[in-house]
Image 1: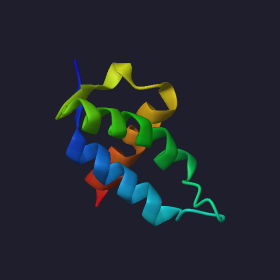
Image 2: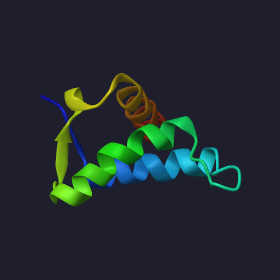
Image 3: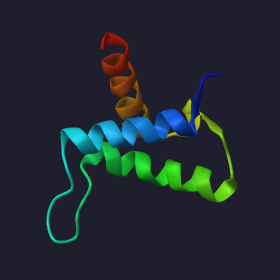
Image 4: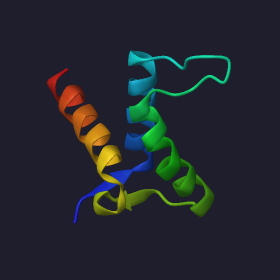
Length: 74
């Protein structure tokens, strides 16, 4: 089973935020950062250091996998 650490999740959120900063008066996050924010908050509240990838919704898995590919290519 594959896991995502809270540090990697935070890095992915920061990456997507740097690619597409928050918009509007409500400072709406881009779709990738927004879909990762919920599991990130859940991990903080639960005090978790890692989470199984397969519990993330499909859009969150895609955002993480895209970030991982980009970060490995750098």
